[in-house]
Image (cartoon, rainbow, N blue to C red):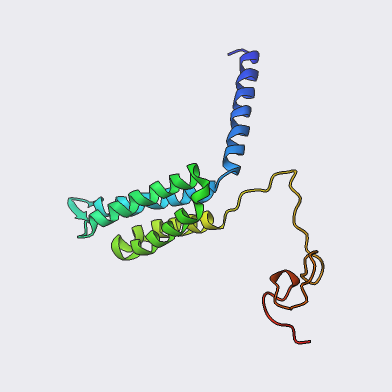
Length: 169
């Protein structure tokens, strides 16, 4: 390979890396990845065989189908966090609930590995917020927690820092 070909390849990889970084920044990427990875051990372990010498240990439970459904749903929710970032709160809460259910249904949530990954992924999905556009000004709050709006003098407005409570004086 010539030096010119390597420069062109590096430029193309750099563009792909930058575009992936932009794509990743516009969605809860890490929450989706952890949720997706959490579904794999939850649906794998109930169907796994462990061989020790000539003895085979099967970890199948009566809830094997439930484990498969929970694992597939977690994978789908991880993909939902990636490709539908507007539904991140629903997908995150559903992932947290499925992770909690997997403790009972699926061998302690895929031997706690899948449980922890899905729980953290769901929490990251719920807590993620899209970045503000560069031209949009941030809302400023004056010292003391009162915004710049007029006080309505009733003491019950949430904009005057009383949070709906009456003033004492």
